[in-house]
Image 1 (cartoon, one colour):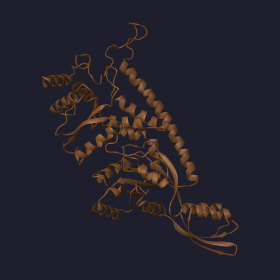
Image 2 (image 1 turned 135 degrees about the vertical axis):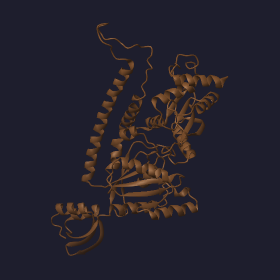
Image 3 (image 1 turned 45 degrees about the vertical axis):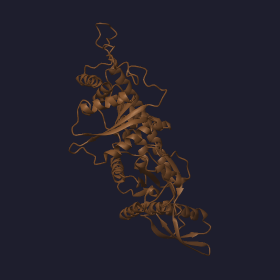
Length: 466
């Protein structure tokens, strides 16, 4: 009987005749679209579904079990109680619901039996598909983009981060406005029957969202200009900027804390870091650099999020060097690398900016895995095997960063008066002294220096001669 009832509800929802006012939908025990919402007395119970699409040209090639595990991790990142999870193979896509009728019916049974509050579909859903699934399953449904937006909304701490999350959320929400205000007819103009029709509630909602989006974009543009001024100020110092990027939960913040002695929030959670953090560190050569921790990337990162976080990601596009932190212990480390590289490519980063790969979490590998990681590092142009947790290999990473930043340096000779303390101090701060011999009142220096710094030094201190 229950199966037949679920089938009828599904068929009704697909035909468009199922209404929120019909018996059964408005009397839900868990979530009511037209009611008070969630029962806040307990953790929300979630069911996660990963559609493994087998259509030609649409498969990701990744292990569906790992994708499902990642989706469960995303749900747990906002403290959902995941009571059921499954991967379903799709040989064809149903336009109305994405999932097939049999799958929807089976999920509906699970929702009822386990009192599920929320169904998470680990794939992009159209507004129509989301609405139809909610009607058929009689519970709230969100897709992968909606879930990531929820995480970002919960994690953003700074004013800038909240602006970026709200912009992404409103852009996403705008396409999902439906005629939920069915009790309101199209309103008339102020002059009664003479005037033309006024705005419908849907049009009012869309206009209000558009106005808010425009305001957020203006505020974020101001953030962007402010970041540009800060960047120009750093260029005058000048310290090179080293940006940490990587798949979410690859260990970027742990490595950042290890290198800087900071206490940036670092936990075994997806998207533990949203707001960028910058600190000054010193490399083995004595060169100072600015290290920037950034938001993690992920498979199928919503384009709205990439656009909204443009101001933050400009710290990556403006970096002098990128450290790609990889979880080398992850089964799908190679796929995660491809995902990060795809996002970096979309940011139009200067191809001349060097990339150092930090093969992290080596402490989780067995001896065979360690050998494989070392062999991969040897094949790469710039790489280091390390553990941000234990500190193993971190010195090697800093040396790789130092070498990459020094790739354009040349050794130059300067004769500087010992009385010219400012010139000597400037060289020690901005170059690497490879040799020094003091003779009388003159210091004979051989220094490894960037061409830009050499030109700057020679302009400032005319008394120093090669």
